Length: 104
Image 1 (cartoon, rainbow, N blue to C red):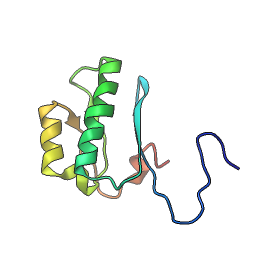
Image 2: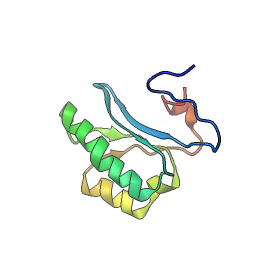
Image 3: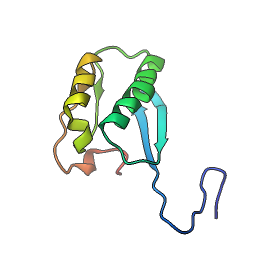
């Protein structure tokens, strides 16, 4: 069964990733991507999906952003980007998918 949003693909495996925002104000911008996530793509997502979501909700600087411990999240460039944008990051324990709303 397929719909307008889901397509059946035969042959070589296709890879699709999804990045999205969930907050107390609701859902925000999202990004579908077909390449492997890396620091450069993640920086693009932060600037083009997260920041517009923060602006849309008119959130103040006291908000806390949650992300897991993927290697590209912890890169020097990403840490510097969050610092430059004054975005607070929630410290995240390793292997804690039970705390992640998407995993449940």
